Amino acid sequence: MTEAIEYFSDITLMITHYNRSKSLERLLSELKKANCRFYDIVVSDDSSMPEHLEYIEKLHNDYDFRLITVPVNKGLGNNLNKGQDAVETPFTLYIQEDFIPLENFAKHLKDGYALLKEREDFDMVRFYAYNKYPYLKYYKDGFSEMLFKWWYPGLDKFAYYSDHPHLKRSNFAQKFGRYLEGTSGDKTEFTMMMSFIKRGGKAFFYDEHKSVLEQVNSSSEPSTMTRNVWRNSDNFFVSQIRTIYRYINCYSGLYLRKV
Image 1 (cartoon, rainbow, N blue to C red):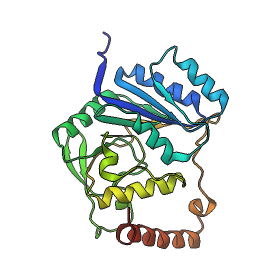
Image 2 (tube, one colour):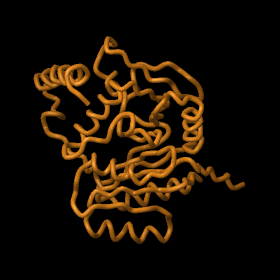
Image 3 (cartoon, rainbow, N blue to C red):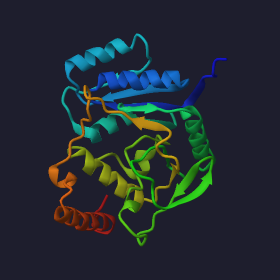
Image 4 (cartoon, helix red, strand yellow):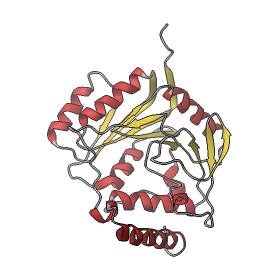
């Protein structure tokens, strides 16, 4: 028996892309297999190389989407902003091109969408994270409300917003501002994270956060996000300095810097 197609008429799928056309094809293919259909699909490209753009154009034979690109690479912030500007529906599902949906993805998306329809005071639903958010209050259907208080221990509480796959209201920028452009992807994400906290953002988090989508980086199309050695070093002294810096950066961002 063929599984029924789940059509999300209020949701646009927005995919950010840069030089990973085969990964994009894989994501579109897996979503089709998952029987998910959206009102629109926007592929926001950050000036990929010609061979990738040519390959993407050929994908139109099998998939219905709009490609929005620029002649010069302008970074993550611009890619997110121009993609979001093209969305015409009340809700946006954001997924990077190197993810694939897992079993029951359509059900989890449907449940997350229902939460945002039910709770108009919430801004987004998060489906993936490297680590489980530390402060959660269970709500229903496997989702929990994310909780943030400045006095909660540790730094992981600041990961209240993330650029990892999520469903959000398409008027997100009206409340939290546009993504910061002309800087690194990490700083773009950090700035939005602080804006989300300081402007009273509210989000649901799927507790089994590795069971909805999987991030897949192949050797032929590895991650395009680069980070410096200082950030990734396992040296004990470097890690201690890095932790102190993160505390200063997070709390100064919360109280001293404007967003």
